[in-house]
Length: 361
Image 1: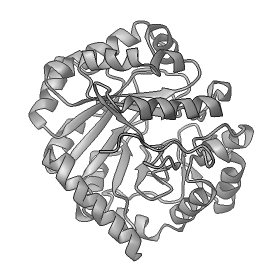
Image 2: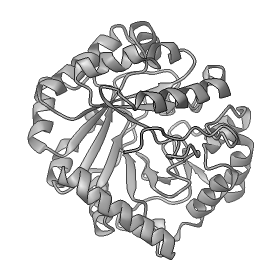
Image 3: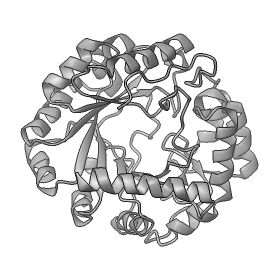
Image 4: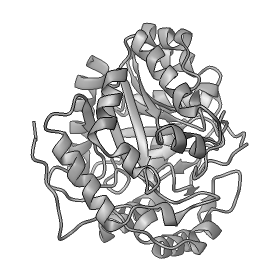
């Protein structure tokens, strides 16, 4: 609780003061994709199926060490499937003064792994559930995906871990997941918090036809606001502030991302960059403080709406990336061409239809 709560409150306050005073930039939180490897072949994923890039253990350890020197002790760990990354638990256990949010499909969460995390005491699970049985099987490319993920949830519940569930909401899973019955199902299974994302059609096989329309996005926001009143679990929201203004963690500098190639990126699905960490991530602070690319991209995004530029203005984003001569950081090497072919979809910026929170603590 000290690592997750008090220390991160101090970190956020420090970050806000730095930004207000114009001090050298360093994000409050860092998302780290440790590997491209995965045990599933999910459709609509921006990570290449069969990719094999990974950070070295020295790089991962260096990212954490150098971030702590800047007062940042909270990390999101992503993949691929991060539980395939050998040595991950050892690194997290070594940094017992930090707190980690582990994003996983849940299938590798055995009772043995859960008890190991329990003993460590500095990890919360963010388990991805992309739909109920039919939708999960279709999205994951594997039979019984939903049941196997729930088995991972139950292993974590048995170990008395803090459990989160996440879902990328799109047209095909909207009716399954955006309802009170689903929230109560998760709570019954022992989930403590639920994180609703808005589906972003990026990657090698984007499906913009499955993106939410403006009405669905507004309805999702209304649902989240209303359910906060008495939901049997916490509902997390990173797309809007308490007044209903659109938010992008990258645009406000709260969070940036490091890819399995070592690229320092704006956010996980925006897979182009100009800077890379070195063999021990000793240059991390220097990159964040001096990156004109990241600073200009923050300004570009915030200047439009502070919403998601990947959804709302792909043409402008592609033009910026081309002008900056940014490098493709993926194994597939086709990101810029993908952006040029895609069309923008509805985003969560609702200037004239803001929905403020009703139940602010």
